Length: 232
Length: 350
Image (cartoon, rainbow over all chains, first blue to last red; front, side, top):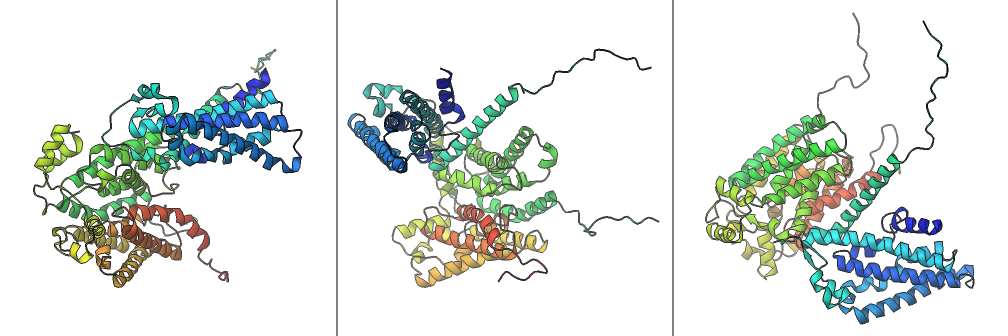
């Protein structure tokens, strides 16, 4: 069980695809203008990641080493096509607002990276779990960035949630404040870069705090002297 | 009798960053005064607000970074940044605009990159660009010169417009009371007219161009030019960057004007409108973010001039100096890498 805990820790924090590996930056920066878009793309990526990890892990002994990358890419492309068609069928509004970034999941380095680095070397269950945790880590970063950018730029949260979740979700939108003029910078790509920089800095601060708090293993206990000779 | 032996340089002047910055600030004063004369109290209020916010935020960041607060504040660099940004912001812009711009300039552009001497971008211009792309409406509604305004804002009126967040009804009242205050700058007017199919000569017959250059702007530019020449005289800056900027802008504008005078404005209008002189002498010459060698500085200046012309003529924003300077800031390390002065005693590389 400890092994799964490690996998979870790696995906969510220590080796987070968004904050540490800095993989998949293009969708990370491009679609996080609103929380809904971020969640949509994060979920799609997570689905593809789990699926590709399972499939790659299943076929790992059958694939010749020399041509493994093209085969992995084909598996991923097939899965992305499935996800794209599903989104097109069941969440057409979201499909329109994500645009090119949905098919572009194929080129997301997180997916091929996990296929190559983890799934082609581990059992199916572990690979599926790794895919889930990496996907969740990516999804979380996307959501935090999307939420903060949406709040800063429009003063709302979950605007257009009905695109993702269906009509009942239209009431989920939270209005924090009414802005006469929206803060465009947060909505535009530079805002994504700046926000990403702050997220990474924030993670580094937390890591540093944790490292400072952790007891250093090589502290030598101060031995009180057994015998004190009197010095006059 | 003992001779004190110290290492060179033996003749030193007590000339530190704070002195330099202080003198640069003094040299902007004629320009600021002229701007106040033409555009009213708003200019001074924005500058004062910017300086207050800059000093407070710089002190807080220094405290957080565990740096000596008082010593660093005394180097006057935050003061200069705030002054330049305060001049650049439209005089009657709401207060939060200035506060946001200054905070961005000082905290993010200057201190997150490591403080004075480590910033890649000119803080004042980065703050300005942040405001311009975030709030284009507020940042491009410049006030009309006092002579053309139907009802110029006095000190109290300016303060009210800037600091009181007027409710919707009050805004309406202000709109009626100060009708005609918000007005495009000369460059903006020409851009709009050209896009509507007028020729530049027809555009120049409008009241804002009464003296041929745009009311007020010509004298503001002249005042900054005078301040810039004073800086050259005092050896605060070298001549290469301003000359590079002005020469390349002049050449580009002349070529454009000669090729097609109907859709391009003349070189003199380019040189004496908008922020040309302020940017060429006071902003582009920032020693931290500019190129360092002599030829590098000429190239750096020329790059800014070309970019300004291109962005002013073909871009979507009326003035271009902030963008041009940031882009040139990006190129400065590149320029410094490829253009190195010949070391004394060595031959040139070829």
